[in-house]
Length: 338
Length: 199
Figure 1 (cartoon, rainbow over the protein chains, first blue to last red):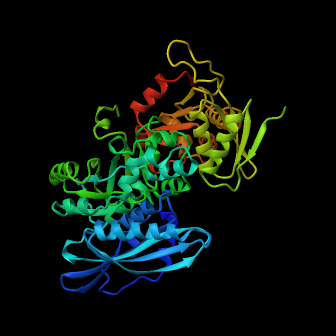
Figure 2: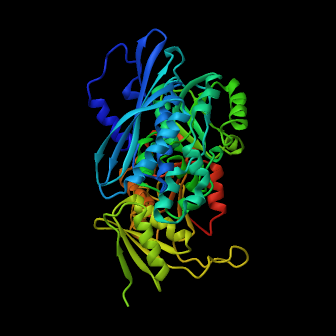
Figure 3: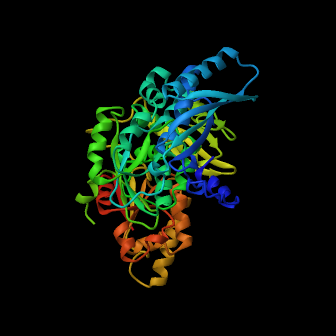
């Protein structure tokens, strides 16, 4: 569901006040964090969705990578995972086996174990996971905390929503979008590890609300503003082409309506590029606000290591209003007439 | 022969585009697509334009009607020959005042309101509208004119509003239609246009 609707509902629920609960549901935190004892907190998250690719093993892997992502975004280490399955009676059970195997293998790659799960019958296939991990409360990277001057670093390209739609429409085959599938399957573990060795003031993973939506959550939680450089955002190969063929979802429009205080200074030419910024992602990368003096070394390590496409996509500006400014590029405005 | 009509109401993306794509593959002339939401409207329009068709969007009961006219085999040559242009397509309207002409202000303001209303109702929307100087009042201070401009936007017109002008008049927070833009983009919109109409 869209970020705006969700926010309205969450605001109406009674607020959790237990002192052990370190995370806040209302600020759009990626995972729940619960203090067990000094120096040790539990971090929990859950995620599930219908298939975005045809191959069941790949779907299982992507689902697990996506669920684990919230743990990595907070600087945690995953320990256990539980499967959640909604399965149509008519579907061959071999398919389910492949899905669960994909999930199992990915969880093991992350150094965690699958501890069980729950299955129900449903008309549409859905698979997800609930992941539990641990984190040192002193080292949590939350969604709030971004400060003016920080560089916004994105570790994976965007465009999975567009490409999944194109796949559904039959405009591309899985082999045409290999770069996006490989990226969705890839864990954010190594990226989180690189970031943990740099001064990161806020971090989140990019999923359903799209890059601009998650950035807007980050600046809303942190009481800051931000500038996003559209042309610096890495895209999967066929995304712009497929977008020009009308391959976008309602999720994209919902994400656009969530980002209420946005100022677009790119002119008319970047229309497709702009839409990509709001494209809902599956198992997207990490978006981190990195201290500007650490950004170059963090980027170099990411690019030469686990995330060749990692890029500096914007900068954090002073608040307190969460205003998102989208420009064509990093230096574009400097040569413009005002 | 009446045009083919495809009802895509109730269909979720990407289905309306898939239907339009099927129709285009066998189309021998213009056809009409009904969609019931803005996302489908934008996606079908985008698909059709990318495929070299001409697209006209109109509001309809329960959604939007898109009239799609398949183009020649390939999009027209980009260099050399001038692209044949009918009224709205490729036209940029520059509005640099909140009134039309110089005379009694009351008349000028009424004329501008009426021009925007007529533009919103016309068969063809301009491709871009640029608001500058006191023109920015039309998309900020006045709900009535902003609604006409919004209607034009809904029909695919791109609306650029001068950010410097909004700042100057302290209207930045009151923008009701269009996108905040700058002189660089406005300049390229005007110079790159096939046809500029200055009001």
